[in-house]
Image (cartoon, rainbow, N blue to C red):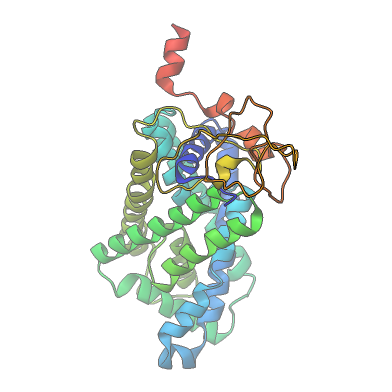
Length: 353
């Protein structure tokens, strides 16, 4: 299995949060503004698919699932381009904070700026691209937009929207988490696609996605929704729920499971090492007893069974499994190396003393 273990993935999430904390604020805001329209494209495709009147009346569950299949397009573009999405930053910054790599001020600055940037970018997309651009000028699209906003905001109660938002970002952050564990593009896309599809098919509430759906309905003249009601009954409960879902059920949970009391976590970015093939269900020995074979000259006997144990890195003996990549460190490995983002605040303070 050529992937990072859950513990290594949690360590990478912490390093990414540390990296984001050091990002220039103007770049963070601009990157967040770009993120809004990227997610907006997925929302727009979903709206277009939902505008099927016969299915809405006769097979609402089917058309919801079909439209959910296309929504992950936005999150795929966001993750692969390194854009800043507020809801995934909840997980990154929470893990980095709990891992003592950033301060609470770093977390709040990132959350607030990425939130406002996502909102600004999404409102631009709603008004300029799909609004004045006339993408949904047909009556069927307008009706679908207004009906969807009614279902999202007016039908459920305030506490129901918040609880749905917990589930939404639980799945979104889990999708981002397992995409980080993947080492190549196709696996990352698959990892993102199915959890994201699940939250949309269940009708859960994502605060940044709702920044498209509800303002679009306001743009097209929804008779019962205004800006004030949108802030009170959509922005506030979905923001609270998304913070709980991503920050506690994913970020805090995996930090507790994999980083507390574990010491330094070694992350191997070299493709093909035996570390990437080890089972992750429990602790395993790292000793490997090698038997030289003069027959094959490989350092292993014919028929020798590899049980997920790694050899001594300092030895010359081959301990790599067959793989499709090279032995070169990837760019993301250099970017998230322990030398740059592995230190915690308490260890930095001791080093200065």
